[in-house]
Length: 99
Length: 438
Image (cartoon, rainbow over all chains, first blue to last red; front, side, top):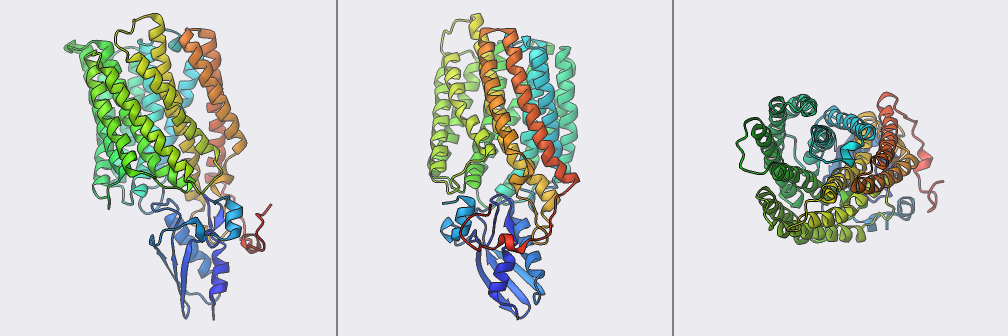
């Protein structure tokens, strides 16, 4: 049975190439729902109209489908609530210099 | 910029690479023939070189980038990629033909090639207008882009009118006034308006900030539009009122600068990369350009040799200083993204892909930046003094900067041919501590 911690570690392999930090430490992941082998990720991006929208959503799918026990992934990109830097981890903040 | 909303990357890249080739030819031309800047600015060769810069370099890059940026930034789809490809062909034939015909001063053929170019511009404006028509919500960026498309259309019509007036001598307006009015429509209305508009999206996006005061941002666009409408008419009529409208434009730019400073002060991303430095320096150059513009708009300014040279400096600072530097800065964002998208977007989450900043050399960016600024300063002073050898030296520095830029962009493009994919390194992405990885 897949668990959220494993999924979050898997998502750390997806890096925003403009900011050069993984999406978990950037605080882009709002929620992960697991239903058997199906995973639904609710996430955001740093700005609406982000040029990396499709690429990052695609990367999330690929990264999770690489994990054992995941057969179907849905990515739901939302803008409400908007991303703020307060959602970043200490690691993400130090790595990127974002305050 | 290149997701489901945007066209394939080959479309903007085609425009951008055409533009870069034109920039290289133009910079080489000015270095080889410094008299174009050191001497009087209304002659066949100067007009030809100017159109190489404004149509070949600036328009090519702005138009290609708009096809990519507008759909994504405004969260809609490009109306037609097919029309955009037709536009590319017409643009290429049109501007190359125009430059060559200006050189031999065959205005009839300029008109013919200008009509080809105008047809392409018509497709561009129609395509983007249809794209704008379906955006979910209008904002200051969309209003600015729509304004710039309107000014572009007027610029092209004014250009065709100028060519026709040269052939059949029917125009009641003074030739220099017509040319200056046409140049301001294009330079301020299309180029500066487009830079101002898209920067309300791009500066916040790249610095992780947001527009701080929408009324101030909208006010700057309104002042620019009102000022340019008045300036165009008063230049055309050689009226002393042009000073008033030049001041309105300068006020609009001051409001714009105020807003950009506010956006930067609120930014969450503290470190400024070189692409942003290029762009922000270009915006700072709006200050001397505006100041010089107001001086040149002064009523009863004596028509001396110095005044004519200052007009050349004004054009140089506007087109090579503000617009070119802003475009170079944005290309350091746009081209790496396009290449990254084409080479790596499908590998994200499967392989270790480089970050955008890994695609180019920051050291070369810094070298190019300083070469450009020193070259621009040198060329501006030498142009004001009409000193041919010093203009050549300044232009050689600008050419060196362009060469460095091309080398760096070549490094980026090499990823299209030879992508650098690495196996996923699980440990490198895990936050084992709070220290950034070395």
